[in-house]
Image 1 (cartoon, rainbow, N blue to C red):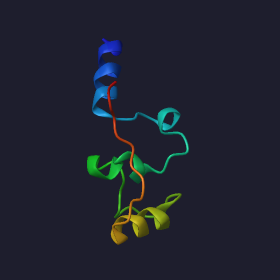
Image 2 (image 1 turned 180 degrees about the vertical axis):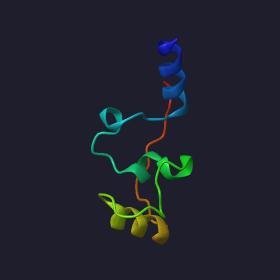
Image 3 (image 1 turned 45 degrees about the horizontal axis):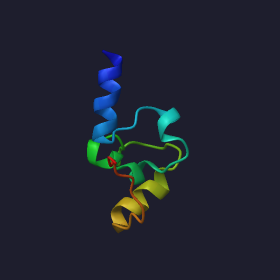
Image 4 (image 1 turned 180 degrees about the horizontal axis):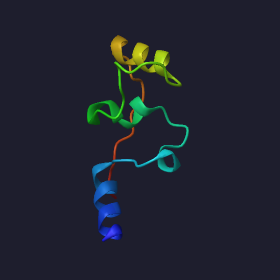
Length: 68
């Protein structure tokens, strides 16, 4: 069901769509490890910043799931 899907996705820390991502930088949500960010694609908004951050290896903040 959709409720089970959403619960499993949240446990894994996977965001879905811009409504959940908000204004957060995709690399901060570890989307590059899921191949959700293209480093070979042509022009897109934020491409230069994304590539520079990734290739410099300096991602200052990341978002991780946790349970209380």
